[in-house]
Image (tube, rainbow, N blue to C red; front, side, top):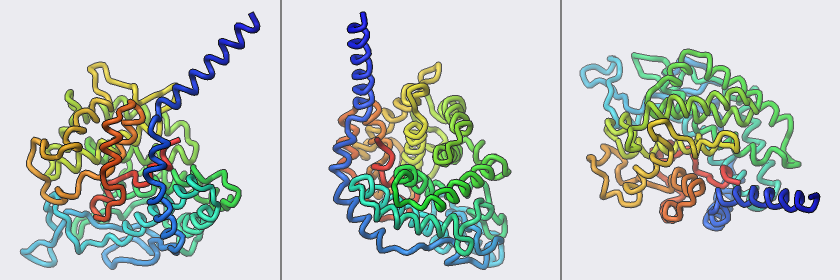
Length: 390
């Protein structure tokens, strides 16, 4: 009986390990595909000095030196009068709006994401040490740090000093926290900086769940509501806030999936926009990133479906044909950036690993992995996929 028990136990352990490997069948190949690019980006990142929100400011900001500030993308001067409140042109980006802080945040994400990826590939701790200098400047150094809130994000001249909608700008911080998760056990990581950074994100999470702007964004019925859950899940994972992670998982299952997805797997709220193709991709990327962040043996969001059959797999199955061949898209082209999409969307990679779909992986492999267009970069929540997979 003892021998039989040992055999059964060994078989069970082996099967469990195989199941985990099967769930991520392409991870080794991902490293091979991205290795050259990762090391090149990390070489660039090693040359970058920290630039935080304190480096630039706008006279239109109602905040101070340490407060993140940005202006709504689709808002323009009123031709009737230069002093009038701005007017909206949905989907049309105003190039003269202040977005320097967003650029700085994107740059931080690119630096830490690249360094964490290179550390994962090589194990070289020089990448960890340099990432620490950037995190110290943003989250620990009182002379240069950003305050942990977004009170003045996506302001509109003459209308709002800030909006809950602006919270979506902080999705750029997700690859910072994910990168730190990858590096946090490294011997050369400054533990004081790590502690200060976790404290910063804990305070930011508190603001996200208690301030009116955060509550408004949480209750948004489109990609903004999805991105609230996505970033809260990412920051809660970094700070080991199990309660918030459970809240995000439940919200995905009971609010996002049933209320945003149609029976065919599409997102009606995104399809009615002036850029339905780009917004559909963006929302699906965000939902699959939630599944990648929160899925566990006990709570596998990849396998979850509503009573009427809505699931993340159905969402990927709906959109995949139009990503593989954009000429099949049934609606009008997006009013801007139609030619720039798709790129190597994370939903393709995460979905391919979750469902063992080789064709999805091949499509991901053949798309652009290092986009240069600002609109694409800011709407691509995962640009360093190596730090997101085991």
